[in-house]
Image (cartoon, rainbow, N blue to C red; front, side, top):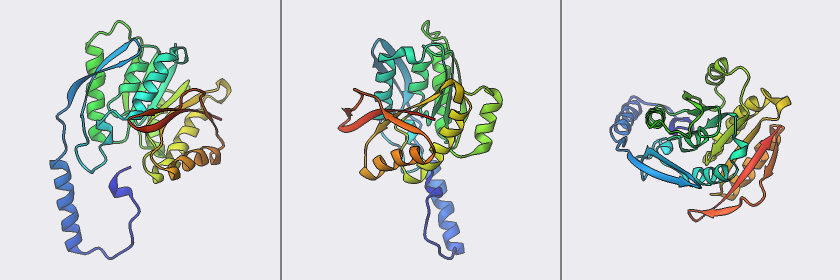
Length: 251
């Protein structure tokens, strides 16, 4: 969720304010860091190479340029439980640089990677191209990248036009950062799960705890949306000095 979407106190907007806002936008665009490094990641027997930053570039909404602890947690879990992916169609929410979706392509028949940020989508698409050009013999899935802002019906409908049967799996790693993003996240998750209600689609969420308030909110929002949330046994662990866990969320 971008800084511009945060709720701010009401006040009169002057011409000076508008000029200052224009300056901020220009500075933000000027300081975007796109000096990505080709980095190797290993999850079980899976070795992946992709472009990413090693640290955040700005205070703007570019968190997807990094590989976060939750992605490592989810990838370890999926590598150790590859039968969950075998032959499935999957959609990932908040894909960032695509490390989870690209791993899933080794087992799934189809993977759609999504993000809402245009700058992040650029590097996501580059990593898909990099993966496809490597002619990975282990890859069997069709990979694509789509823009999806949670709660945006137009974005979701465009994806579903190409995938009217929905998906077997919804995936998310370290995507619960800001409180105002959690309700639209679960709005989107519920819509995706409802498409495959009779076939028991599930949302696998790698959650990393950064505040007690968010811990409570994630569970509360899932329940308020009529979803069942279950901690997967044996997945609670410490990663990058933070506690993480895998949740399975279903209708």
